Image (cartoon, rainbow, N blue to C red; front, top):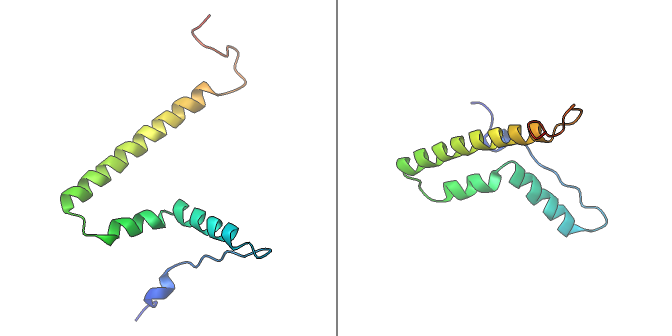
Amino acid sequence: MGIPRHAQFIARTVMVQNNDVEKACRLLNNILGREQIFEQFRRTRYYEKPTQTRRRVNYEKCKAIYDEDMNRKIKFILRTNREDPYPGCS
């Protein structure tokens, strides 16, 4: 039969220290946000038309390419151990 449906998910355990439940909740929300659980929940709450799905996926691809390019450019500008810290400005 396979793995039961509930066993497919990896459990997250957050320890509560010094009865600080709010801090544990913030940590759990941070973990869930980083793993995009909330976004997936919001997306599957309502039916998404196929055209909207295509537009969203294309937007996410374009955004990922843009972010990767910008991060590469920023790392290039902020690199250290160079002879001329400001190339082309001499």
